[in-house]
Amino acid sequence: MNSEKEMEFIKTDIEGVVILKPRVFEDARGYFYESFSQREFDENVAPVRFVQDNQSRSSRRVIRGLHFQKPPYAQAKLVRCTLGCVVDVAVDLRSGSPTFGRHVAVELSEANKLQLFIPKGFAHGFAVLSPEAVFEYKCDEYYAPQSEGGISILSPELEIEWPVCLADANLSPKDLQLPLWKDFVTPF
Image (cartoon, rainbow, N blue to C red; front, side, top):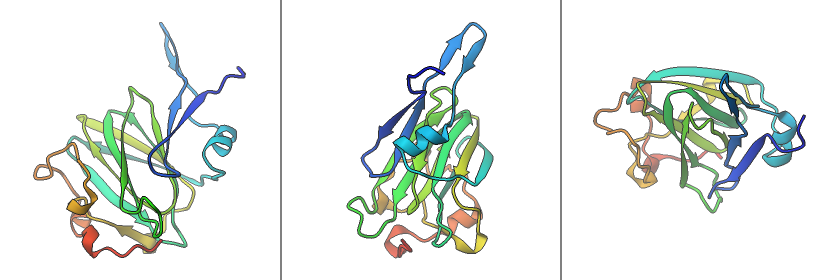
């Protein structure tokens, strides 16, 4: 294997949230890239052991989120979009954090092949920009339905500029019932 790194690790404005940009090898046949290396991830992001992979398919104007799992089942996630395009959002819920209540928003797509690492203590969601999107994520903790939590995407205090008109957004009934940020008490 080439001694050159296969992945670029880009820090964001929020500590612990990292964009992963793979080194893509393209030619007339197509492309190849390493989408994950435990060794590189441990050295450049955090020593995280992923235990579950999930995948969702959504259509244009769907917004999913903002979701998290409460301790002791909190999850760190490594997310990517393998078909289509989404804007992915991570909101800092860590009490005492200098970036509490702030967010990172990143466009993830099959074209740019970026991934976003979201540590424990964050709410997560995404908006679909393409006709269809397949979204994949690795989690470091198993799904625990009794530990589910969330914040409404309609919370103006979060100042998230969703790239989908909220009046036209397709939200689940469950997500429509999530509390607004002003009524939210963090479990982190």
